[in-house]
Length: 119
Image 1: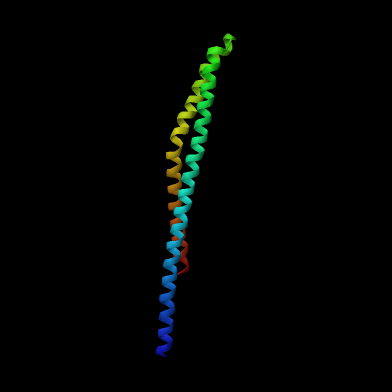
Image 2: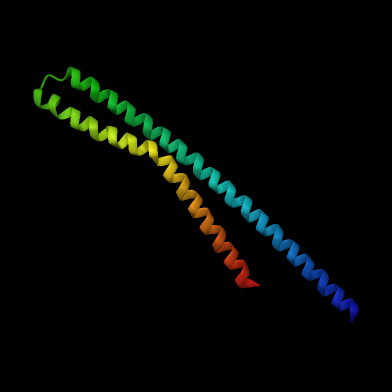
């Protein structure tokens, strides 16, 4: 009987150890996903920012070169809208990083609930 108890305890200890390893691996996977999301967010932000800057420069050039008075009068408003979009774009990585952190925290809580419900 003691052999059976010892075998059961060894299996239980092994199960706890494997569960801890699984938790650590899951945390590393989630951290890697968070980092990839941050990297992609920065990359998208940089691309959008560069594009908006190019558009702003083109609009400024059009303002000085436009011969039609109506076009020249309309361009500052268009430039203002693009500038506002550029400002919003500049703030985007911060919001995106917070969204990533919130999402990953939610994933971790969900994973913990799932593991504890199986116990």
